[in-house]
Amino acid sequence: MASVPPTKVGGTEAPIPTIVGTGYQITSIIKQDMKDLKLISISGKSGLFKLLTTTKSGIIAESIIDHKRVMTSFTNVSALDEIAVYAIDDEIPLWQVFKKIAKKENNKPAIDHKSDKNALIDFFKEVMPDYDEDRVYQSHIKKIVQWYNILQNTGYLADYLEQKETENNKTQNKKDKQTE
Image 1 (cartoon, rainbow, N blue to C red):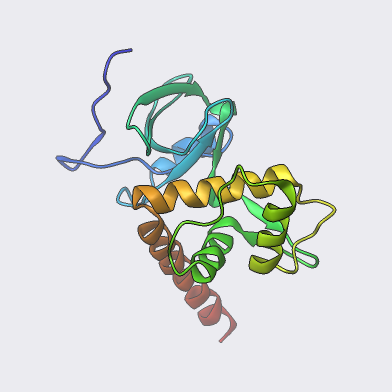
Image 2: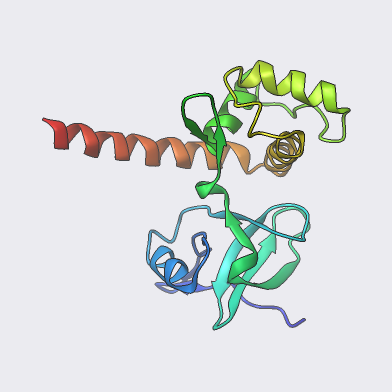
């Protein structure tokens, strides 16, 4: 596969924001702030990826582990920003679950995602005691722990959580102003 250069934005190289589902959604997300770190999961591929650019039929992304580039269709991609974990009464955004894991583990790696089923479930109950055990399966917990460890080990976790916290604060400020 030929190497694809990073997208040029205003004369400087910048990663393109994340995607979800369809080409229309991708196009609208790409128009957002280009300095944001956008992370995706690609079904059938292990690890996490940064979105680099879009093509007519899909996306080009780069692994945050080994920096290899891959091309895939729009339908095989999930943005971490759009993933949430079922709680008893609500859905908790994935970044908030990562934040809880980071707090529990003092910003160090978590339990190995290959640990036995009971160890993973016990760990997750400590992190998120109110998760919905009927809708959050052991395979989900394994994936969440794996993604957390990937982000932590590659140095992306702090930046990702800081970005999400900033976005959350901006959204909350807008909501507060609307209710005043």
